[in-house]
Length: 265
Picture (cartoon, rainbow, N blue to C red):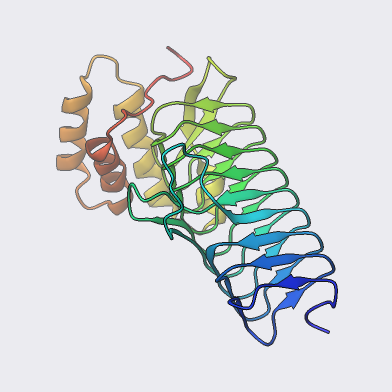
């Protein structure tokens, strides 16, 4: 039976006929659950929450709870989750506040491991991995294919670029550029290199990876060049490389500032 008799389903909830709700799970409020999505035993999904197809919501997770924001007054904000996401045990993901778009957004094919927390107004793209107890404060943006190690904590309003790899137990207070590896511990975080392994696994060609490595040297290994001059140089000399230009634009669009320290600093 797709819905176990001990599960509690709110009358306003809309569940696809192929959705599965296991024992003692709670679906509370105007929740929408797509095809083949599984709500595991004792999980709670609430509020204006939309789940796409083939998601798994682990036991004892709390999905779509109200934001932990003292100014929230019960506005009908949303949490929208795409398709094929693995959300494991004891994860908490909150719907948004009314301060920005009113939506917490999670894309497709993400793995959010046990005890992770995703706060209000966060945006997570696709193919993201968050290892156990990784924590996002409000309004954080995580790019596609980013990988966050265990116990990583991201300050509110920070952005993590595409394919960035952040080592475990890191505390991030500035934007992390795309395509890089960050190593170290809480107050000793440094950018180590381009994430070549992650890029290769994703099918990126060698020439593009080589160009990213050259751009990395200009940005992070050339202390004699001012950042603004390095960005101009990359805009002119590597204008045909989409990935390099994406990194350049990431710097230009940063509001909090971008981490630029390296292991040699």
